Image (tube, rainbow, N blue to C red):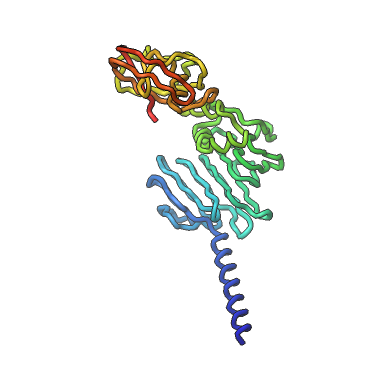
Length: 319
């Protein structure tokens, strides 16, 4: 009798867990919302979107300006909707997920996926099948732009590997090319690239120079000052901040520690400050300061800076 009761209890538990799994797998849950102009459309009725709401077949989600929606696709996977975007859930079941991008841009991180699961993103007349982890799609430039950041997939039956960009040509053919950082990618996709920069660099999909180029495009106030750039031309603009794209240098004169003379080579001072390594490209931000009566020299991170006396202008790094 005890064995029978244990078996019945075990079967009930299995059935309950399976039912719960099917329930959660057949819906998409809004996990987070940024901003307050996000909506859901179900059966022709529009309502404000809220955290915890579920999107079933035929349900649309819409974001306005200054708002984003984050959708939980399963336990470890999230889809992000950019502002002024709209999606519709075409099909969602225990093993398949099909989402149509009606307008705007989306990205996703698929952390875990079973071998037989099917994920599809429809945009325009093109379908992207997802077998990997991270991607972004932007439809605002006309023909949708598909970018596979990590993992792999296919677009219209054409393989799409990590670091590939795909777009439909004028003749209806799908073109796949390596990812090249330029403004045509758009700020949303460039932002998603920067957000995943550590993994993209670690997997040799993009280089540090690629990431730095994306950051420069996203922030036009960033200046490329070259290898020997200093802050002398900014002297007197005290307490103002300026960003520069630099590559850590093994040479160059630097005077001071923490606060440097404004004629110090910024790319070398950044190595001393521990912000970059020699040969590493990054964006650094400095604050312009008045001159000091003296500047101590120190040895840090393999760089020896020189001491100096009174000087009319200084800068420090903002971390």
